[in-house]
Amino acid sequence: GMKNITLVKHTLIDHSLTILRNKNTSTAEFRRHAGIISKILILEATKDLALADVKIFTPLAPFIGKKLKDRVVVVPVLRAGLAMLFALHDFLPSVSVGFIGLERDEKTAQAREYYQKLPRIFSSHKVFVIDPMLATGGSFDDTITALKIKGAKQLTVVSIVSAPEGIERLQKKHPDVPIFTAAVDEKLNDRFFIVPGLGDFGDRYFGT
Ligand code: PRP
Ligand code: URA
Image (cartoon, rainbow, N blue to C red; front, side, top):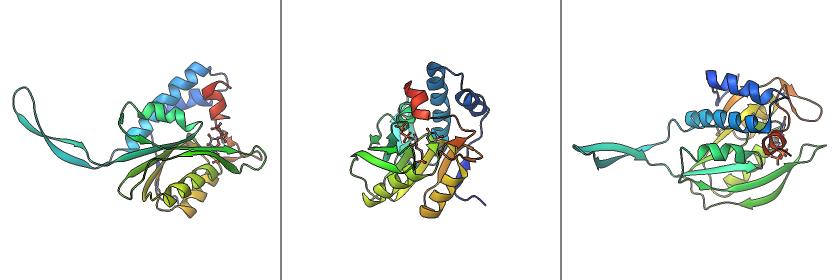
């Protein structure tokens, strides 16, 4: 069975994901609905971040409230991960952002790193790795490995559409890393695209 994976269910995800999957969807609509799904996923993935007590004053009385305690680092996998980063900024405007640029070879689906710029990462940091597509899992695997070398100990993967092959790879190589996804699709095709999937996310989101 599948461990450490949360299939996030929401009526608005069902609605928006169908619009992303539809090949006739315009770039503008694709962006808008990718933003909606990303927000719902991020709300779910950040649900259990730690809080600290904070004393404030309302206009009427003192009040012991809460503030986020965990230091959060977000790492979008370039380029498609940027789509989810924009959505996350609304909720977590002060997070540190690290970048890893990976591009899959079109024939082998092997991810090649072309860019890396990461903040200092401590074991206490909550690190969210975001990329809308979890296909072979190569991109997430390489990114997580690079982040663990940098000292990350508490990682979470957030993706929009996942393939069983990629989930299995991450669960085998990084069983400590929980996965939040909006869909687990049927399979990969012989070009390592997710079926039914939604095609090339980066191309559709960025209009290339
Ligand atoms: C796509 C997608 C993921 C990766 C997933 O990126 O955005 O990063 O493939 O595939 P994997 O699980 O098999 O590694 P792509 O290489 O097309 O680059 P892009 O984001 O710049 O379009
Ligand atoms: N990357 C994408 O953008 N789409 C897929 O189906 C697989 C990898």
